[in-house]
Length: 119
Image (cartoon, rainbow, N blue to C red; front, side, top):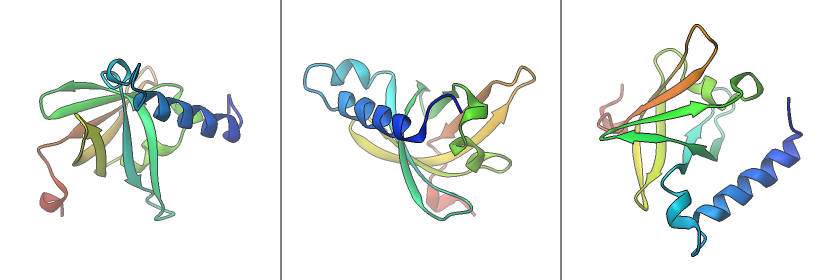
């Protein structure tokens, strides 16, 4: 891993705080949001900041250094439910992670596919 877990925890807290900053928040929220998901194995709920791009009801999260992270693996295969904060509200959707031939990972969130529609 590139960073110690304690460093990542502090960095995530700092980024989350920056999102709510009166001075910088509106700029940061254009590119960084928080997602909440439940771990497949642990059953624990996690909330982390992520960079994103949005196109209507589809949000794409590019995972930087995917081999050093594990959260995105919860969405491999059929994917799973996720909550993402957009425009000041929490939206639920269905997330699917895919790795391309070059090793890059993207998590695609379909906001039109709500939890109530999932099997």
